Length: 484
Image 1 (cartoon, helix red, strand yellow):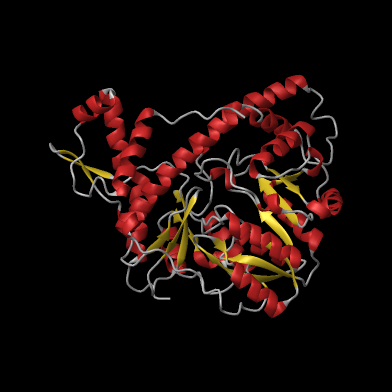
Image 2: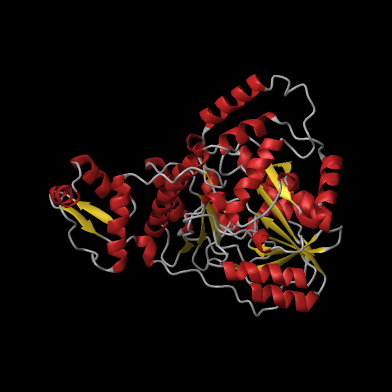
């Protein structure tokens, strides 16, 4: 692991002044120190002082007034009401064959057929935020060292060095896994497929977060499994109390699939106490716990948060992850460590898709084994934080009054709750006609509870075009005739 590189000086100073504003030392409306004062106070250049003020302005903490300088402001996004917590005491809806595949297929087909000029429906960063050149160079070196790589059959488990790098990085998340415990997959979606096939059979009940990623609902339907939606907090993730009630009510839950960090679509982060309690609860009741760890590396946090797998003492946690969101969308690189189901998962992998190609593993393993990977993650997290905050500020400014939103501590997306009477389906239809694609809330649940929600991507650089699109979305959301 490389030593952490500090952020640029202007960013450090912007964080200092933001802290002073949040603490109340600098009140909204107060004048910021002038550029000359900042230069003198911090012994910095004019360009650094200007970058500091512009950073505060773009993040929503200051505003420039012509011929008067910069003034403190409170971002609009902070004035929005927080989303409600789920009602954990309500009996969950009966488990069901989800029946969402047709809806998702219609959504995908309509999005593809439309002339989309701005796609806010995905959860991915813009191509320039990924280290394409470095990965190409790493693969070129790998081909030079291993010219037989495309004519040789790779190991079923995957490249040994790549698996070793994954095992080494897992230590920071509290996991103690050997390289031989890592099975390389075609992205996280294959890892989830394998995990579910290993622990359940058609007709079994699988507990999932509500709302949850629509791709998971499609997987459950394709495997003939029943989905039991468990209320999930925008702040702390899956409700343990609601899961306990579901266990008491149904008693036949075979597995639980959960995203503990930056849950999709909510962006919630589960506290360590909840994670430990969840691992114990599932182990006690014989419920296989499938952990989707797709987004953890995008979390704005000091150090790596502990994985659910780090509390696993019986092999009951199946840990799944991928590089799709954090390193290279074009590489279908994922993996699974399956605890006591490891041998079964490996056989299912052999039966289903055989060995993965290995060139991408060689290149990714070489890149991830250096400090360049951690530098890439820091740059990506910094860019996404600025884009999330500017997108959130635009939503707070342009969307109808009583709109609510969860601003997560990291990640690629925002979950937006429209006012009573608004329909995400109507907003989706109207926006798509204007070339703007969004993800309507009904994709993320088989119930009607998410109909007033939108998931918006924050992976694109914030520019005038994006600002205009968000302004237009706000107008569409507030238009008459959008009643649900």
